[in-house]
Length: 120
Image (tube, rainbow, N blue to C red; front, side, top):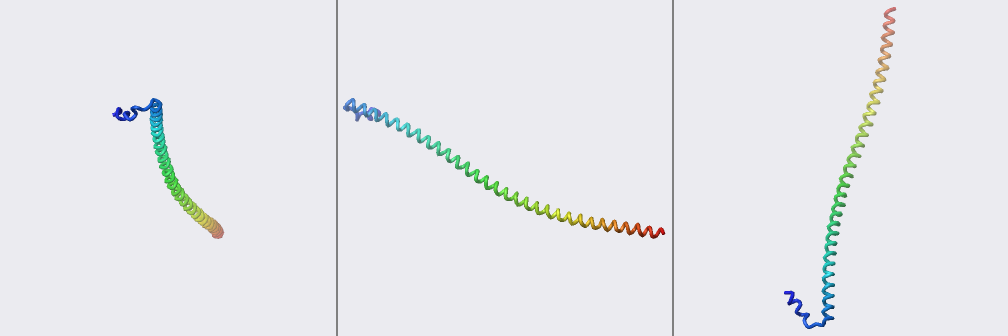
């Protein structure tokens, strides 16, 4: 088969044959270079797709974290409101205890005074 491919070169001058050989070598070299560049391009495209996927995954993770952060902030706000309500309720109860304690002390004094009066 290669003999048929070479048949057209018969009868050409050595200088022309040399030039044909140089051109064929250059074509082979360019084909190899093209293959290498094609491989590099495919490799870079694969790396680009991998990076795009990584960026997309990070965007999704970021969105999830933002939602989680928002939920946690709302939870913190709700807990802070509950804490303030409990603190207020505690102050009210302490105030009631203080009032009742004062009433108890007053009643004790009244009882002591009445007991003293009874003893006389």
